[in-house]
Length: 183
Image 1 (cartoon, rainbow, N blue to C red):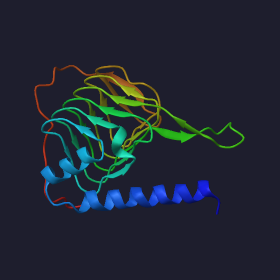
Image 2: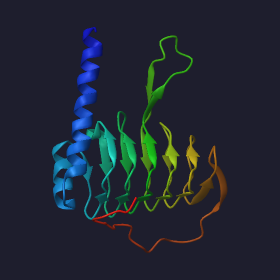
Image 3: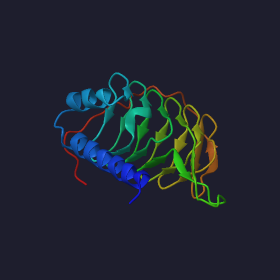
């Protein structure tokens, strides 16, 4: 094993330990303090539920009143910015890094993901690297978002396609927390 492979294995072990520690912490206040120690910027009344997995969380920024539900995977090898009052449904996956399929060495490509304010991403959605999701947008269940989503759009499918424009001004808060999740 060469030194690059060894360093890569050590990094993967560190990520696994981080995820284990985070998911075993008992209270949201302790979880939030732990994330802040690892470099995560997380706003007031924002919650990340249990059984969420991170890859290099220090590049994660979350606004106020946002919730990331159980079972999500946040690949934060590139930057990930989540706005205010955002709900990310259970088992969503957000990627900021992938592979260049046309590169002879299958090199990695990173792309910042930006999720605007008042966005709702329903369960089991997949967000790909380099995507921006505009304010007030809705991503329906199981969608694969590989291109930017305009503000106020409702999108769904694989690949995610425009369905209609959202016709409301959100007045609700999405800052909820559950201590125990039945999944």
